[in-house]
Length: 375
Image (cartoon, rainbow, N blue to C red; front, side):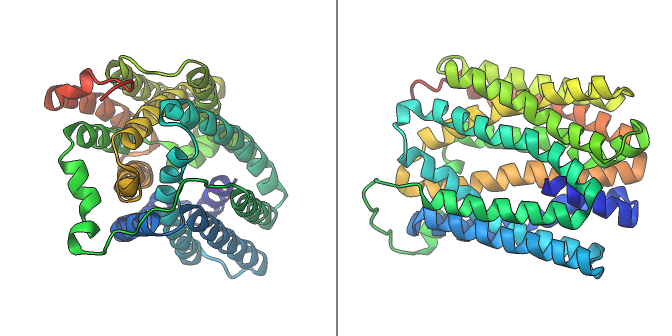
């Protein structure tokens, strides 16, 4: 809901594809600056409490969007500044939330747990953009106030989760522990290849920042159409997550990973060429399902190959990689769209994703044959 409202408001204010790209950059920059700090926080403090505080900050920042819009003083720079605050909260939230899950379920069930949790999230992502588009039509403050209420509700629900895992002894702080998450990944070629593959593939293939342009200028729809376009990847992801929750992947995870990224690239190209809303929605749904499949493989492997005492720091670095591919990918799409147009920008991204797969097949042969069932 928030993405729909912010994208629509900013494009209405400026009409600039480049500014849509800045939305991703504003949320990505805090992840880069805070990566080493947030990992330490997730490993040294109550992970559940960190998530709760982050939800409260996100809710407060969204309330500021509502108040500023209602009062009429919120402009481009103010929106981007508030998004930086939200990005900072998410920088702390993501590694704490990711490293909390393995403490709540047996490791043997981790991939199914990730898929089940993702199913719930995708249901929200399906309803959210559609509802967000309808609320934007009623007024931007209405949409922002609804998002604020949901953030606060999320904080209450997380507070009800009980982590029964024994308390961890805090590792003494040192320069070595500060960079230990980075060092751990650099010494694990499988993790390094996996994260870097996702980084470059999604960085080039991300086109969601340009959905407001496609909705208004290419497909000829209004806020309702933008809501459907935003929801389509989540519909595909939901379907994929339900399949994986029932039939978890244990063998041949490597070939499945590569196949999912190839499908992601092809679906991006189809979306870029489409001029019909129905075909665009189908392409985005396929794209979302492929992206979700690779995400579950990646998250499961990272958590399974990392000791609990380091999961916060490793998850923080992982969040940096995924944040780079998502938020910076939006900036890259906006920049290319400003230079060449929206359609060429999407096509360049889809072809670039396929090229990345070809390079990584040669550079990281171990990615072709790993499983999730064993070391």
